[in-house]
Amino acid sequence: MNILILGSGGREHALAWKLVQSSRCSRLFIAPGNAGTTRCGVNVDLNPLDFEGIKKFCIQEGIGMVVVGPEEPLVRGIVDFFAADPDGQKILVIGPSAGGARLEGSKAFSKKFMARHSIPTATYREFSAADLAEGISYLQQHSLPVVLKADGLAAGKGVVICQSTIEAVAEFELMLQGNKFGEAGSKVVVEEFLTGIELSVFVLTDGKHFVTLPEAKDYKRVGENDTGPNTGGMGAVSPVPFADAGFMKKVTDRIIIPTVRGIEAENIDYKGFIFIGVIKVGEDPFVIEYNCRMGDPETEVVMPRLTNDLVELFLAVGDQTLDKQTIGQEERIACTIVAVSGGYPGAYEKGVTITGLDRLPAGTGDSLVFHAGTRAENDEVLTNGGRVLCVTSFAETVYEAVDKSRDVLEKIYYDGIYYRRDIGYEFL
Image 1 (spheres, rainbow, N blue to C red):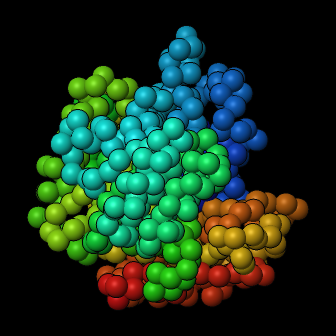
Image 2: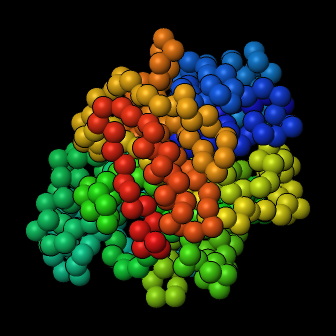
């Protein structure tokens, strides 16, 4: 089977690395890919939002499966686009319909979905510009800290945790009147702040059945000891030490099963990943958010720990036979550390030469190098984004895995390279 992956980040490199291991994968294409994905398949100069171009390429190359990495094509309806086309209907697209992608694309929709299906989450209210005065009054009486979320997609930056009422009102007005997040902030969800420790839970569903993939914990803040501004993710660890069998059974019973049953009950076309951001409050799990795709950089620890043939799992999604699949996991701990561009998550330079990669072929030993924001030019690898590379290592302990990833990163250099040396710090 010929397979096309849409996307260009570390998540897509990790998916490509996993998919190409399958005997069911004949040829692998990545659109647009990065300098690392060329080791797994053929990069294609296609925009993941160019649905017509993607369909034309699929027909031309005999693509049998499209794996959608990022959220925006899903929210914009790529699954519906293929389903509405006679030629596109023959191609299995891994991802939810636009209706299912609303779980990520609209915070208000996801909160209402959780309420309908009695899924534990923080209490909330939603407001639009027409409700500005009511929203301000509500904030003035709200306990602190308080969480403000732009309703739509905001590139992972649409959540603000406010420590004071003055800050909360100012941010609320910036979202609804100051266009801080554009159309994504035309509606704002005001949410109770939950105190606990977070983890990412990943489910693959065919719309009726599901399997749970290895869980992970990511690290959002740019500075060590979780300081500084939020980023797309500076590293991840899997498995998560505090997510024991008892806690994960609560997650399954109270969150995963009601979510999948809710999707089926509401006749939502959903054949793909559900990323559930979970917070452990005391001994109980609550949902922070849903995403309609795999997380990044969590994919870079989840895929290496998954021992199943990923193509076989995706084919079972298409046939709605996931109930016949059993997930296998690598027992060792995996830790990934993300190397970023100088200045990230603020302004940063692109096109900086990366050296040392020629001594680090991906897929050897206990460490893997996944590319995120890179591109190849004239036999050189250059930076092409804020998050540049991820190094994932296996070991028996978090400490050893972190140490191995740091050792690899010390052999890589580009001007401005920065990475956290304390990923998994609370478990070290």
